[in-house]
Image 1 (cartoon, rainbow, N blue to C red):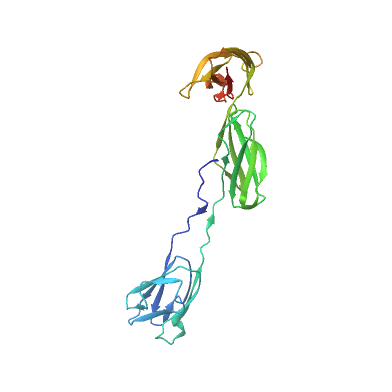
Image 2: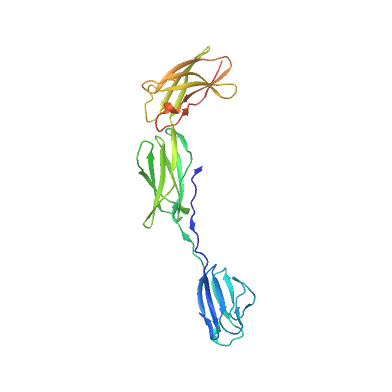
Amino acid sequence: MIATAVPVLVASPARAATQTITITKSGYVPMNLTIKVGDTISFANSDAVVHQVLFKATTGFTCTATPVVVQPAKAQSCTWTLAGNYSYSDPNQRDRNFRGVVTVDAVVPVVVPTVTLAVSATVVKYGVPATLTGKTVPSSAGTPVDILAQASDETGYTKVASVATTNGGTYTFAVTPPIGTSYRAEFLSGTTRVVSPVVEIAVRPAVGLTLRSFKGAQANFTVKVTSDMNYAGKYVRVQRKNSLGGWTTLKRATLGTFSSARFSVTLPRGTSRIRTFLPAAQAGAGYVASTSRTIIVSR
């Protein structure tokens, strides 16, 4: 599976904040405060005497000192790691103004809508399908995803299909590009049109090779090239696999009106592996080089 790079799905949470509760001679100001997980409260003593901040809970936060004893004109801080309600007081003071509650809310991640797109093959033979797959965020089922395509001989994208996501926000769609084509996926999140990265599928013409007859040292073949264009006047290279594993060109076969040609080759004794090769320069605009199947001939 060839996949595109996957973008960040969840936005970074806001930076942790620090708020202050001032300890005055008459109590905490403010007594109650709401913060988020990761935030810090600084307990600043503006009184002329020492004060203590004592929480009923013992977990869900960490403080710069334990117990939290704050000298005059000094401060101690606590940072929260868990959501909840945290009651606190000064055990040395009877005044109700020396009691308070810190409410800690959970941080809700901000989901950034995205859509991915991957393709099962970046190069296909003419007439052979490939599979596009992807996933949307938010990852809900039933989200319509538009598939758009731009062939190499076109100047813009055109919608070719609309598919619905399944559980987990995934989708699948089969395409059979007749020529080199770029694809992208889009879906609507609220009023925002979310667009995937582009994937490209190259197409190689189908090159069919048939052994018509074989007598003595001479083998007779037919080759036919198929795509959306006509290959009259183009040629294929007739090749034999050599002892080093490479391919040696024996001759060229020029294609006729029906993009086909008949040719003969003289083969040595033993086993020969024959194929035809269509160079990129002969494949035509929007296509890549292609080869036929290999035919084994023994004499």
